Image (cartoon, rainbow, N blue to C red; front, side):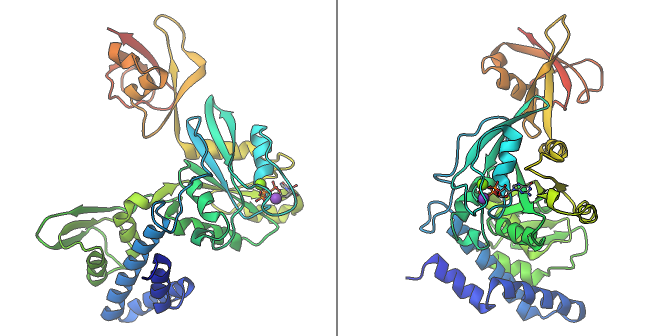
Length: 383
Ligand SMILES: Nc1nc2c(ncn2[C@@H]2O[C@H](COP(=O)(O)OP(=O)(O)OP(=O)(O)O)[C@@H](O)[C@H]2O)c(=O)[nH]1
Ligand SMILES: [K+]
Ligand SMILES: [Mg+2]
């Protein structure tokens, strides 16, 4: 019986290697400009869907292939966690110690850190968990080293610091991104704007609101066939690729995570080189060892985490600005606020009085389902 790994190998060998698949895609897209070969595009759609399914199988913790974060995951504390990903010896643990004061072994040799080391930063009143992780190497997602377990932890974080050594070529950035992508992490991306609705009958209906330059109906049908979907409404609202469509079908195993590139060891380069680094989007040049530009890293972290601070105002008193209740932006209703303080508050809740960006009138009376905004002030009125 062939294992999942064998099956993936078989498919990848059809186009020789994952690298060649990329080249193949490039050639195909160039072909598309002149004359699209229907047979190849159908076949490619099929292959890509097959690959995606098998990769998921391989990465599911229950499958024989393993995966998952067992042994590497730690108790989550705080309102958000930030995972440190990078090649060995780029300075992840040095950064950890600098940011949190939590000691994490630092040394000049590779793979100094062997497991997850948690620490905490308090920023703008929010407790944020930092997870120093072992270094990963190319091929980590395919099981090289402890890479898979490491990436599995990163996949559950709210933000990833990809730590890079500025003395090494920036091609490292692409390699790390590929590792994360291969594990279903989508870096600094929103889910593709495709609405997919499976149906019992009626066949496949495809609509698009923008011209599709990357895919044709044949490819879409090939992918659907591979997923054994015979009836569905697919509304495509972006110039989607076949990978985008597969991401929607594989939504359960995809994580869209913001990333900041922490370009470390800038103490070892020239000002001219530093200027160039500043042009990289989502990057923050730092020196972990010297603590240089750590403030900017924290500011960028704060922006990406998109947290909501809510100040409590006891009736007839001034708001308490020293200790905000911090919520995540996808869980920031008045009810979430109450639950963050104590589970029983909702039971006695009558209404809330809110000042701030989330309300039209200052103040405004609102109910449990009202969504709060950053720096709102709230008074809870009990029954
Ligand atoms: N020049 C310079 N060296 C640094 C800086 N940060 C870390 N280093 C050095 O880089 C080496 C590796 O640092 P670590 O913090 O152990 O790196 P790591 O990424 O945690 O390594 P692993 O746990 O092995 O993956 C050590 O010799 C550090 O002293 C920096 O900002 N500048
Ligand atoms: K090291
Ligand atoms: Mg380390």
